[in-house]
Amino acid sequence: MKILNYINGEFLAPIADRWIDNYDPSKGEVYGQIPNSEKEDVEKAYKAAKEAFPTWSNTTLDERSKILSKIAQLISEKLEDLAVVESRDNGKPLKLAKAVDIPRASSNFQFFANAITQFAAEAHESVGLDAMNFTLRQPIGVVGCISPWNLPLYLFSWKIAPALAAGNCVVAKPSEVTPMTAYLLGEICNEAGLPKGVLNIVHGLGTTTGQAIVEHPNIKAISFTGGTKTGAHIASVAAPMFKKLSLELGGKNPNIIFADCDYENMLRTTVRSSFANQGQICLCGSRIFVEQSIYEQFKTDFIAAVSKLKVGNPFDADTNVGALVSKPHLEKVRSYIENAEAYGGTVLCGGKEVTVEGSENGYYLQPTVIEVKDNSCQLNQEEIFGPIVTIMPFVTEEEVLAMANDVSYGLSATLWTSNLNRTMRMSKQIQAGIVWVNTWLLRDLRTPFGGVKNSGVGREGGFEALRFFTEPKNICIKY
Ligand code: NAD
Image 1 (cartoon, rainbow, N blue to C red):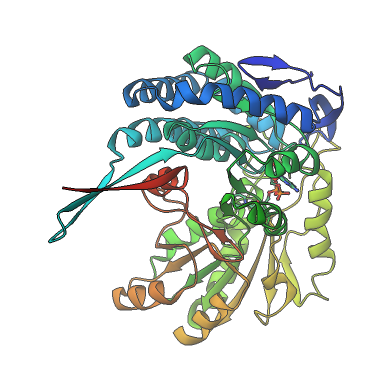
Image 2: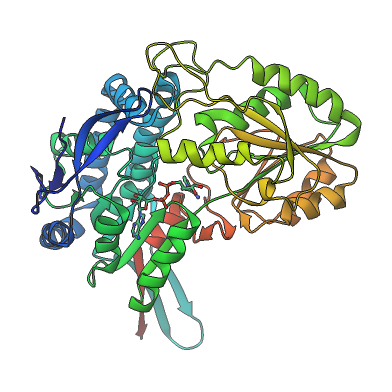
């Protein structure tokens, strides 16, 4: 099956007729082709967006909100079909796509459909100077949205929805590894009555299509989610052009477990926060630190629970861990297991590739637990982004806090404790954009989302996203 670019409301082949293979990771087979769009395609998308902008930016909030709500509703109505497509394209268990990816994509559109109706201008009275200031929040114009492969439609919509709600027109690129649901989003937008040119979706490689978006002189803001290295490259191109930049990058998140936690809840959630989506969630807690007094108990129980996880075809109802997203990614993740000893760890469970009956060439790997002795080892310092976690004991709060922060990333952290004072002390000192205490992945879409250090710049979510996708303009009136 060949998918097409969505430009000006139409589905178009790439101008240069260049294509990339699309793989089904559960089978390790090519099952379609996608455009490898070049500068000319991005230019065409840009022109459509530019043309649509004067009307879209002046469309009433009520009307914009209705169209975004309609997109949300259509995603919900098509949940089953979209989940099947997402699962096939990405390798994730179908039940995860049904429970998380697609419902949250719909929620993103619904949330920003509502949020834009509550987004207000600010006013500042210059007391004693007889002047009044008010600050408009105007849409930027044409903006670029670039997203990764791990939560394809979910993260794509997390950018597109606020950009459109704020009145911008968009040139967007999903990951070339998982383009299918983004393609279907084009059809949904047409069905929802989104005017042509308001959203344009160009497919292709990062180095061709993505680069063309970032380099485009008139695409004035870039919202990017992906790897830290790619983020640094994008910043080096976009910063000298004075573009607005939002960068959501990698993570190496600590999961800190104290002996006074609710043990059963912690254990259940830690299995999930380690291996959900094959460990391919930027928020997964990949470095587990356990208080010494319960370390041996945790090790035994955790390994027992992880060993029960069923690795299998994403479409089987009892599958917990599906296929990794691609062969190169499988090889990258496997190399950490093969070099575990050299990288400072001992494999406690998992670590082997899995052959799934009927899908012998799929990219399956056992969930893997590695014990490390020191947080400075490569296994604890580098983002692996697969079904691998490390565990190690700690004795004091100060020691674990230092280890949690001793990493170049700072996206999220999880803390398990029933001690309120410790919760407050540690939450304040952990270097991360998001701290979960006694839970994981609980999201309230109004809250700021993003990381510190090498995990990114800027915040998404709620009004933060609407602020990013608008330019403030202060108007001062003397009376
Ligand atoms: P990636 O950086 O390889 O690619 C992300 C996107 O950028 C893709 O669409 C890709 O085509 C594009 N791209 C690549 N090179 C580009 C260039 N030169 N110019 C413009 N675009 C370019 O990342 P990935 O492998 O798709 O995703 C995994 C990474 O994403 C992990 O590091 C993960 O932690 C991170 N991630 C972060 C968050 C977050 O919210 N912080 C969420 C999910 C994933």
